[in-house]
Image (cartoon, rainbow, N blue to C red; front, top):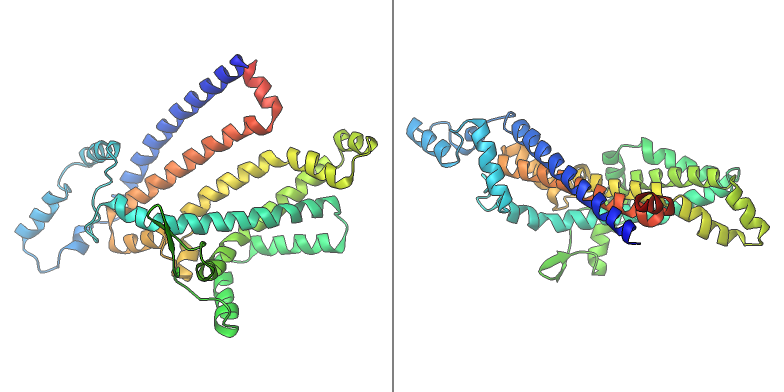
Length: 331
């Protein structure tokens, strides 16, 4: 046991050092890329401003320094949790992002949970009875989830459930309930009605992926000796599916769940724009339009940070789900 925990500690330290290296590389790429796409001074200053006013604004924001000096100044501020100030809103960038982040977190988590809790059982059923008509219908739905564009589905959902039927609101976040100073929509029925359409729209790709992954894993495992021995021992089919099949396919499912959650946080831009959801994705679109560089850099760095952290959590989950990995690290 001591050797196992020692190996786990070494693994965590190694992954943390790798994560620091990845974050440094990503911050440099993001900083250079964002600062190459345009000059925010052209947006901040009126065209008829004098050269003295222009030079003063450039000096105030440090844009007169070489790019490498601006980057190291950014890193120095980043170590203290300072992402700079928004050029458009004139408030700290971290404060601005944190105001919008709970909405994106709520939407992303709802979408991934819908995909997992509906897609995994449907995929297991389709893999358990691959030739049934219902299984083929499930796989047809998964094909649509991969093929249909998100923006088109979003507009169709609004037209059907908000315009024609009038069951659900077409946009915005609705009322929220504050918990520890953070507002959440899912804590009220009205808030859930506002969350329903964007979460459903964002979950379709995740749902399709979970169905196909669970079906492929189930079909493979149902042919193994593990299932044959379990049936010979007199275990019921439900017990076999729960104890053996679900456990054996859990590792790829955990991987997909973690990576899809991170990608949903990063790329919920289309859904947030269609449904006017006040999250980070809509903020980054507005920031790109106004060339608000500090907000763009902060958003992309935080996205990279989320990916690194979630990848680390997924790697650690492997050791808890697969005894072979635990024995390998303990050896």
